[in-house]
Image 1 (cartoon, rainbow, N blue to C red):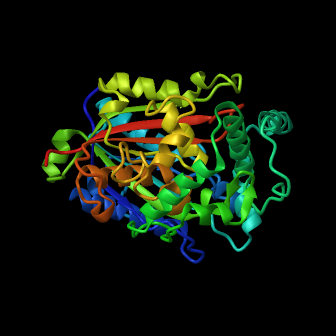
Image 2: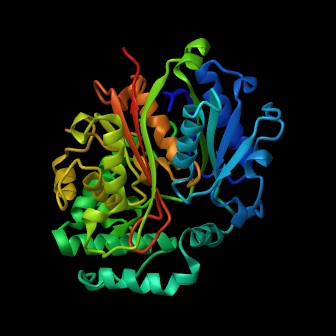
Length: 412
């Protein structure tokens, strides 16, 4: 495989844009990535377009990328459409790297865009139903409920606010982890407060309000132990990365970030107690092997915190903390800016937003910004190696898809 790099990255602000069409968001992110690289649409030889919900929400079941980018100027460049639930955008990036690394193309645009906000919030939340095996829905729910029974909610906390089915999934994961390792709701609140504090410094974040740990705990309950600030919102947005050979990036005059390693894996059906067999553990090990590095070498991480508990779990799966120690480490401040290993300086999905088909490339945009030293008040000092973890869907008791990417910054 040839070496590949990100020559340019772009991202819209994530938020609720009821009147903006998907094509408008996609065009903004694509244009920003091209401008960042010093490229023009004619330089793009192929496009990998990620989207997860437009079929369910708008009836656009096919040719989503061609429809969204019509008239942009890409001409006859092939468009490959990708859907991998919440891991769609990172999967698009992985495929772009493979296309460049194989020698088939020198310049490929990975683009993720999602339009989830509708006039009917229940319809937006229902779009998540397609991200697990519907033929096994009742069987899967029964298994999740069994996972959570070992940690019963305290009296008076059973009532749940409006939410997607995946908040029930995460609540089951939370309770299992709490019962197994002693993880606490307060530790989850510490993660949430930390990420909301980070988002204050991110102009592209959907929410930029700081919360104290006590405010997070006192907020409206969603599904115990999760409160509203611990959960990612419904979002619109788009993000993109221009993937090139280093030689092509040099010709553009781009300040490229190297794609050191990229892995996409599918989840498997396993015993809920066998966390050492979690798909993200296998994917992380393979990424570290590809790059010849380990978690001790990484300076900054963007991980999939669809809930605050997701960050605790992934900090363990990615090898930064032993099983059961992610929550205490977060409570000690080890994952905040200035801590031992900063997680989600962007604010994470909880506050930056979660337009699911764009999320992974939004994470990549943040790491590219960090590795170039351009993150301003949320900059991780000396960041040179960054990791992105992006999960999607559900298979049994773990993600149906996990994409992990390791990036190396340019010399400063």
